[in-house]
Image (cartoon, rainbow, N blue to C red; front, side):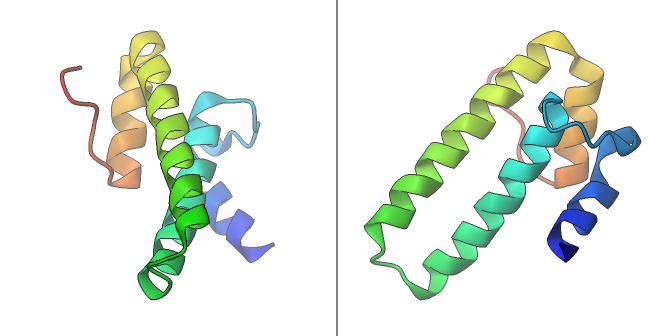
Length: 89
């Protein structure tokens, strides 16, 4: 429950709607961070590596969609999360 509170506190404008693109990006980023820390200690866990690649690709697709639909929100999300923006966009 605490992890959801910390993510909800970061959400832009307090929008907790899980269908909202920015919310999905925040939740995916949280999952990616958890999986990355797991893989630091279990480097040969190939199933988790595959799951991490799937999450990264899903977040990338959502970022592409958000950058096309709402550029201002895209830049705000990328800045708040501290992730790199999309290359060539």
